[in-house]
Length: 116
Length: 116
DNA sequence: CCCGATGTTCGTCTGATACCGAACAAGCGG
DNA sequence: CCGCTTGTTCGGTATCAGACGAACATCGGG
Image (cartoon, chains in turn yellow, red, purple, green):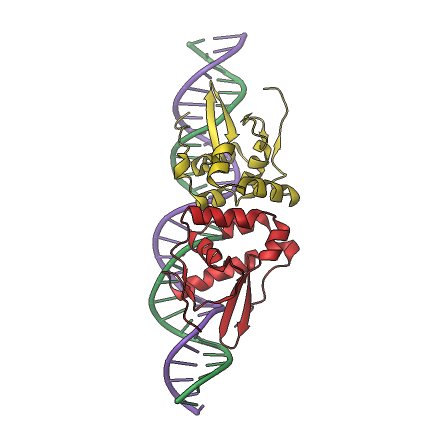
């Protein structure tokens, strides 16, 4: 459960880092799933990759400042840092998301609607 | 002078690739300089990097579909593919550019106003 | 016709990234 | 208290990105 608090301060969020984080189809897909602002436990995140790889991607997103992580018991939850990102880079997230949807990028990441 | 024509078709421009191209501060800086839509010879592009490295960055941008290259004699010219990008990913470029400006990203790339 | 300016390509080095399986840590339930 | 579930971390590997200098190609000018 180590350092799940390593999301940067809003002022520390760097544009190139964010773009780098979002330059991976899987990570874009994760962001897509999270785009409604709701939190997800990442047992609900379905992607055709190993757990360790998912963990890695989530870490990259978190450290870039794109997502937040919360821990509850043995489970972890992710959410988009929408307000922060919108404040820092106005218009970027919406543009990115609609572009990703239009381009069918990240569709291999889905959500498992199992309760929890 | 080889393949200066390897800019992809609009439909071939992939979002992750574009984001990857733009995740480098130097390349973001180049895009910033080109953001007014005007063409530049890349003798005018001033960045604290070796010529071969600049050439590399320009190639990455071109192959990602972000820029266009034209050749005239021994000189080459770059321009942003603004209309194409705006059509393909509406709102992305403006958001990116204002974010880069606000964040002082890519300021190490400047323009040399020497005639030519 | 050779030289200088301009870009490209090549080889190399270094460091980052994606991915995996396996080992580890920790909470929760029986 | 033991084991399951959940997520992290640890090698390991393969590939790719950024950077440089040096060599090469080419055009234009003296």
